[in-house]
Length: 329
Image 1 (cartoon, rainbow, N blue to C red):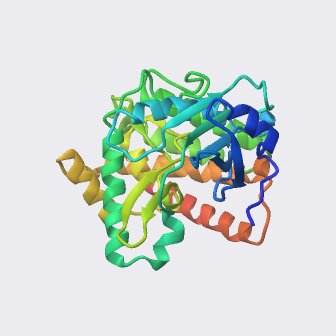
Image 2: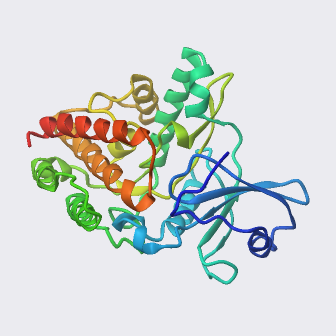
């Protein structure tokens, strides 16, 4: 049975009816699994239409620096994605008024398919490879969209920058502050040293391309019988910057090369080989190192618990050591 985390807030039936009144009458609703940030619900209306309802985290004191105003970011990012050849949800309604509930609400179309992380074990190797290639092509397509600044558009680029290195500096300092506030040792000295080591490489990024920063298997929907990607979801953490972050975003617990089929799909879509020189390796290592820090810190505000945490922390620390070795810090 799907259960909410301590930080999540689903809407009651009466709240759903009030928010969704412009779209129709609610006849059924249920929690959807998989999310560890927003609460996500499925809703059926009287006409048979089904849709997805996402709500913000009500206790803003439990948000990390980059997580503020994420539903508004997702709404705006999906407007950009709607102009691209990407199978993504379409926004049906948003409510940031707090009139009917004490949270922000985003309502989207429900995408078909099965989460790839659930489907992968029953898919053939060929089907899994096909899905990987399509994800690479989708990441390339997203890069066609441009943002007004570098960084994450939360609260209109609160952590943005006029340059990619400038944004990365703000992001890493904010994450170090989050770690200190929650009493988590993320080895901030090494994180900052990694930023210094990659500073010249970061300056090579000159265009704020749209990046889905969290396109892991759980955010990809597929037809298990064929590997056809039927949807990509959760654009709330999207940012504007280095396309390599998109390739790294689905493989954060890794310190090696990207998945080959994904790279093939990406290269085919851009019509050129992916350049992975020393500068690119440094940037990818820094993006993954930042993700390791965030995944360690977020355990506390999310209230995660369970036997899996020991292995999760061990994996983060092992990856952190390998990434720091790549960065030479």
